[in-house]
Amino acid sequence: MSSHRPFSRRAALRYAAGAASAAAAAAVGGCAAGAETAGANTVRYQGWAGKVLYFELAEDLGFLGDTRLQWIGNTTSGPQDIQSVVTGDIDIGGAFNGAILRLVAAGAPVTSVIGYYGADARTEAGYFVPTGSPVRGPRDFIGKKVGVNTLGAHHEDVLAVYLERAGLTAEEIDSVQLVVVPPVSAEQALRSGQLVVAVLTDIHREKALARGGIRAVFSDYDLLGSFSAGCYVMRDDYVRTRPDTARAVVAGTARAVRWAQTRPRDEVVARFARIIARRDRNEDATAIRYWRSTGVAGPGGVIADREFDLWKERAAETRPALRDIPTTRLYTNELNPYRSTRT
Image 1 (cartoon, rainbow, N blue to C red):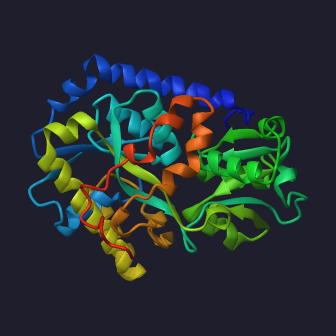
Image 2 (cartoon, helix red, strand yellow; image 1 turned 90 degrees about the vertical axis):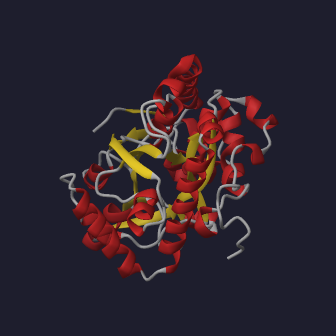
Image 3 (cartoon, rainbow, N blue to C red; image 1 turned 45 degrees about the horizontal axis):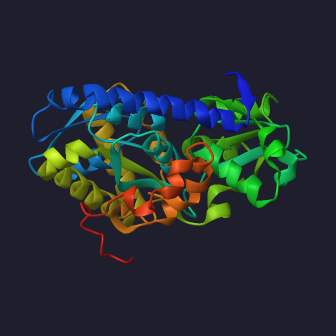
């Protein structure tokens, strides 16, 4: 298991420093150099083992037209994925909106173009403890070890909102020790006592619940209701110099998100399974069976102010300039054909 660290604002500062380095790399020519390596109608991206991304679904459904996707490998996390967009290694990538905020505040020339994951009644991130644990509310988290999948991302910021809303002081919140644990290992670490609380989602949540002996203290859906938590981003220069390709991939992806939002679950799962089998990347498709919903709040991934405002004040603690940036400058729905759709 990875080493732990206090739940401190210093971690956000370290993340911002890394984001600034990525932004600086882009500024000295990384974007331009990367953009020349692919054809005009080719969009480079990183995948996730055992998962189907919505632009991959769009391609399979025939929604991308002449636009082609080029898979260059798999990413290790959302923050890594969007930093690869900044440096020009890929053209589109996705992450938690709080991570995007920190990257933009560090000077990265990227814009969010479509929401791709979130929370709803069927898809949520739960903060789990053993059934007999004394942890039942916010104050019980003080000084405890909490397992998350990565730092500076969704699970960390949701926990911060939960604790702040309960009135915990900055010092009490900082005493919480976040431990980076691969999702596949989180349940075992929780049951063995290495963690007091573990965040479980998707297949890991469902399998752990089926085995019994754990309960959720709260979930992101309990705390915040339905919301889109992450967006795909593109570099501003890419959108400016390749407007037709940018519009094609975003519009096609929006259609794919909407398809997944409106089709029966079993049909979506079967389609995902076929895509994974056909792309032949030697991966385990078991997790697909546990897919419940897109979790995306807006029709076709349309982005709302709230989905950045939820995290903006926290990100501004380390990047005060964010307070002066209008939320509407952080994203655009202009490439999304569902921007006028209400439900």
